[in-house]
Amino acid sequence: MAWRGSGVHEWLAKPGGVVPGAVAADARTAAGVEGADQRDRLADREFAVVPIELWNKLADQAEALEDAVMFAQAKKAEDGTRIPADVLQAELLGDHPIKAWRQHRQLTQDALAAKSGISKPYLSQIENRKRDGTADILATLAKALSVPMELLHEGG
Image (cartoon, rainbow, N blue to C red; front, side, top):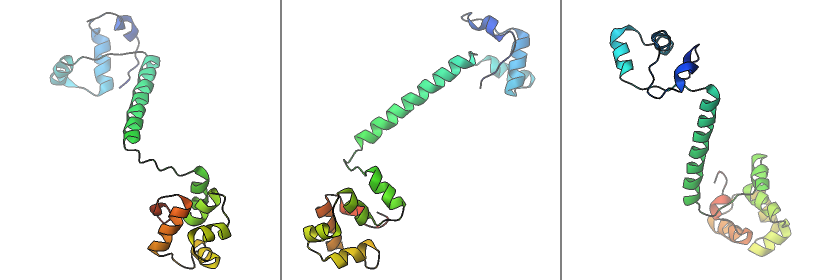
């Protein structure tokens, strides 16, 4: 909790310094601590009051450290799969994943159909959601597009 009050800066730089009684009482009030019993427990704890600029800088550094730790954990769990932005954008706009990947690989329907050994009309029907591809067909298309099969399955 950051608390700003007059006179606080005067004792900040004193190591082991004691908070003046009036400031301590104001800090307790600001913290919602009331009564002698709570004051005694408050007196058992150590607090540091710092300028808000320093607090913000420390908070930013702590967040950056948390981000670095999360990035390291994600990198450790990396499986090597990347989904390009244009593929993601096409899928978000409603394209079938097969169509999105085909266009990303700059293949025509004719080229992908020939590469995967299926007919162009069948590929078109899959891309337009008029037919579902079998697991074998999806595996063949995945191989032709050089992507994991689960990326071609709707909702996958």
